[in-house]
Every structure is written in structure tokens, then in C-alpha cells.
Length: 41
Image 1: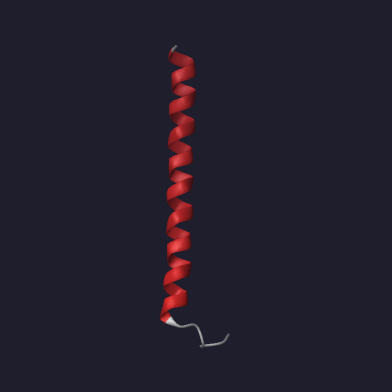
Image 2 (image 1 turned 60 degrees about the horizontal axis):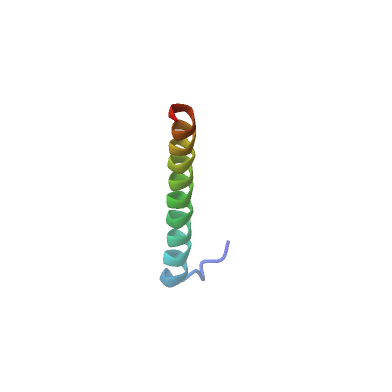
């Protein structure tokens, strides 16, 4: 493995992961709310 990865690149990858996780959580919440709304109405 190359040790050429600079801190800026690492930060970018970390942000990408964080954003993906947030999107996944929001999608899960939205799905749960949608299913609950469909069942209760």
C-alpha cells in the first residue's frame, strides 16, 4: 500500500462515508415512517 495518501484525501473519504451513513439512516427512517403512515391511515 502506498503511503502517499495526504490528509486532505483521507478527510474527503471520511466525509463520503459519513454522508453515505446519514443517507442510509434517513432512508431507513423515511421507510419506517412511510410504512407506519400507510398502516395507521
